[in-house]
Image 1: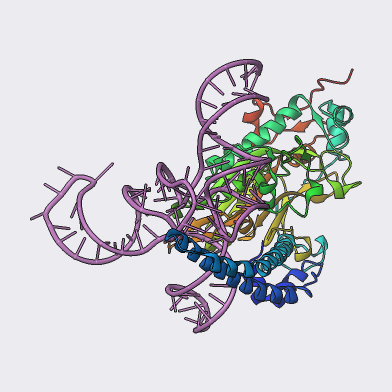
Image 2: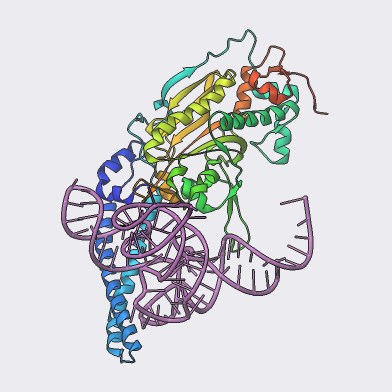
Length: 433
RNA sequence: GGAGACGUGGCCGAGAGGUCGAAGGCACUCCCCUGCUAAGGGAGCAUGCGCGCUAAAACGUGCAUCGAGGGUUCGAAUCCCUCCGUCUCCGCCA
């Protein structure tokens, strides 16, 4: 959420910066709305002040056993105007809140202006895509041939966009998550957390998924009057919400948290995209990094956090590149985002495997997540997060990049301890009857 | 699932329709006192928003906020309703 003060005082420059995201927002009604708000709020508070003053008099008079009917009559005169003013002001403030809740974050000055992903800026490449001397297969062909990846059964159990893994694939999937968690906790200074996979609407509002993006979520209705819950689309939601409505002591920052969870996305707007394989699923695992930092440290933290994600790819020796998302491709809540894209030889391209964002105070304002600053005053924190990494896509990347001519898959050295020492996946087990 | 109790400032805790944004304590900040071992005295100390002043603060003033939202009332922390949550007992259970 943007600062309402900023909107009031610098509407034009805010509108301009938001327009760089591609869809210009119509602020034409805003100025009139704001003018009405200002006079109405002042008038309402004035009336409330009169009512409060008179009511206090009534209390005093009655306390002394005196007649208060004259003052009561005075208050009665205020009543209708006050009620009307309060009602109208409530409407106006409701409209402001709705506008505010739907406005995306301001892109940082360093974000390149562009209309879509073609405007994203490549920052760096790491590693060299391997040259294959045999026809490259994708993870679906490789996995199904090994009998370790089964989409047909997943479809039977649940539907499209789910996967069943078996044997060494399942273990590799688990190994990846363990390896990532161990690296971030042991080498990057993160504290591992375990959180709910179902969250309430307040939490999703806090990180920015609600109210605008409800159709991307799986909603779990409950009883008649009970509030619905939602399956988390990312651990960002429960983990960042740890600090919702909190005022943190100054010494507790930065908070560096890492969390492995499944993520659930309805992929409502993605019908027909990436329908093959494990790239885009309704359910996938992810290891997420979250940092809650002092506002002056967030840009530094953004670089650091991105490096932590890159470190995983480097340890796995997977070629990748780092992209700075342009204004048109930037997510709703982010001020700046680096996407890490891993090389997928079967697609002969780089595909997103991590997204590392600085939200500055945008989420913190929604969350009312604050800390006591140097003046001992509550001040909004800055929040950041990044995938490090999406586990399913990492598995895809390993299977495809480490494939051998015979259809077996070499296990990257750093993962072998997690795989019982195995150096490759090759034997066909659990083949379909 | 059944029965009961409860939700107040950073924390603990009083208040039970009127001058209460809220006693008292702890913590914290500043000042004074004090040559010692978590000593004493004084002052300050919630958040958001509006308006004024300001370069911006500080400051002044008003409004709102005692889990959240509604209601009753001239007036609600206090009464009523709904929701959220906590605790105790019983039942059930991975």
